[in-house]
Image 1 (tube, rainbow, N blue to C red):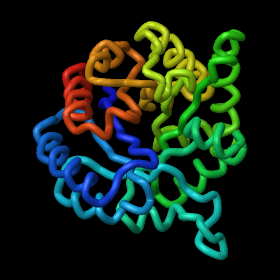
Image 2 (image 1 turned 120 degrees about the horizontal axis):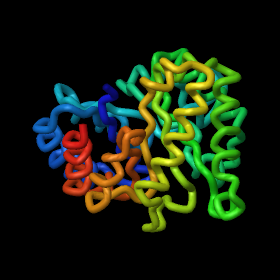
Image 3 (image 1 turned 135 degrees about the vertical axis):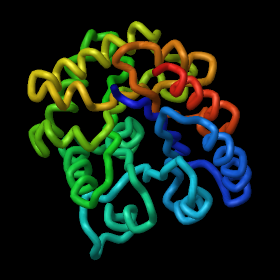
Length: 253
């Protein structure tokens, strides 16, 4: 049975004071929730602060992005080895904002996925379509293309040590969300495409949903057979919301 996984993506938000208040509320509340896995992904600048706050807790830390190169003369980059050294267990790769705002290609995302795994991190691989692509009926074609580049670079077996996050771009930060049935359809498609390459990997990989998940809709989304949790944006900055989402994940086993 796949254990539900919920990761909070803080994006470029927070400061020392607000982070401290959030963590003081999150850590003890999440300690009382069992039967699911949780992670928080703060901005690079606050990784050390969050790492200290999570010591001894059942919540782990992830990075929001990773440089495709190893340590060296890459000003502004943060390597996978550095993230691992700071205590990260996961790292988000291919988030829609990295693809659309910063121009990351499928090939670059696949390279970041590979270097993250080589350093012992578990990538949270984001895939998903824009509103234009959705309206053109291209959702499955786009998602398959994004997956295929990673599988071609690292092999299907690499998904054993990764999480796939389906995040329809049109639902991120907009307040819109796919219905549970719509999201389930894409999750089932992803699992089916992976099954064509490796049935055991497809059965075990956690596929989570990202797209305006909140306490009010988490239980309905997580009840779907192929939705194994969530990659949470705005709601991850509100302790009560994030805890409620994690509780919904634990109760949906």
